Image: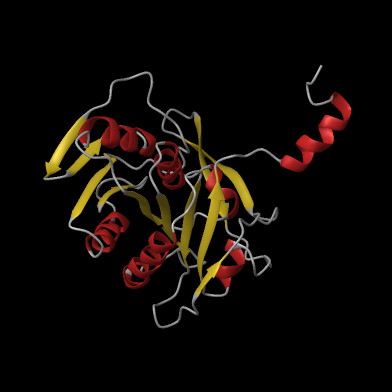
Length: 258
């Protein structure tokens, strides 16, 4: 089995090293194509205005001067033309990608691009402690990731589906199990704002700032599972069409039949 790895935290990220360990426990044909620099929050963006640069760091390990989407495309269309990957895994991200995070995340975008290319794809993320401080313990992903991936591969899934896996902020001994979840919705009380500062020329500049609000998410959601120390596995669908509204609107506009 050929596995392609990418991420959005960059080629030197600790989460990518953890993901490499996970992948190498499943296969001896593991490739890494990851961004040269941190690309968190770039979502499903492509680099169109400047050329891409690719550096080979070791055998089957490359860095790309672009986004996670660029990395997946470069890996599949240019670097791995002899054989398409059988599996793509994006991560392990440095903090959760749950609820609304999936619309911003470069980690999720890597899995989306793999899915669009017809490759079974998985995104993996590790929730940080609620206070956001201290080093992440990557052992939870290393300990539980291979078994979860193996079970998903054995089951299989439709081409238009990818899996979003989030690990809770606890130790392996504290995790309560694995729960199949729905995509949650962030509490509107999450404090999201821009922190205004002044530079040496007395001009303003801004840092995006947020504080995670614990809230009380439903237990069946990814947020609820992480709160309760479960590993969250969410099947996500590329088709964003809301079918009920499609059917409702046909009652107003018709179905296009003459």
